[in-house]
Length: 237
Image 1 (cartoon, helix red, strand yellow):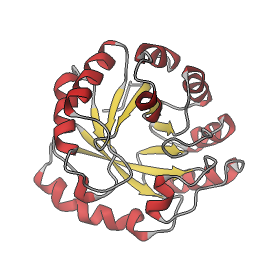
Image 2 (cartoon, rainbow, N blue to C red; image 1 turned 180 degrees about the horizontal axis):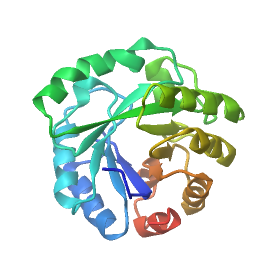
Image 3 (tube, one colour; image 1 turned 30 degrees about the horizontal axis):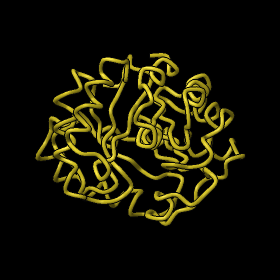
Image 4 (cartoon, rainbow, N blue to C red; image 1 turned 90 degrees about the vertical axis):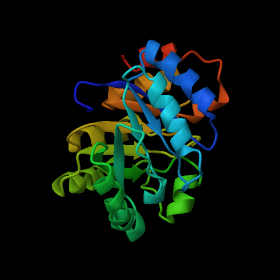
């Protein structure tokens, strides 16, 4: 599903987005070069995920809608795939394996939803983020590319299909280019990078450093007048 796709990925938080707004964003994004839509947040089930997911998928004109779940209880069958995240930068067993075990009944009931095993790595973005608080794990240091690379390489050794390096939603500091380059060198498969990206220049910098998908969410929530096309062009779509 990710093969041959590169560019901008928009993360839609169902707790902050209505179904109508999600449909409008999907329609606009599909026409302006968005590569993927991600659905999710760092909390558990909020009751709005399925409605927003349905709206996204109906209006996305074939652009994949992939869930970015916090917990197994948040999983919904109205997406094309799920980033089955393992928080390999932390040591909390709930986010290394427990939520995956809890997700098994969902994938048995919905074999049409594709699980994409994904190494999730939180990098220090300059403040305590929601992910750090909820997961009770410390981020990797922002200036230690070799530590990030070792974590990514370890995830590849145990068979992860994709990698997601995140500074956290709304972080004041994005993942640096040296960190992205280190992750790219160690990763096989798609590399997602998100958190703290404040403008088109930040999107371009992440792509130039090796990110396959540059994820933005809070940026569009803050500045709804911003043209998605500018960000998609910066991502090389």
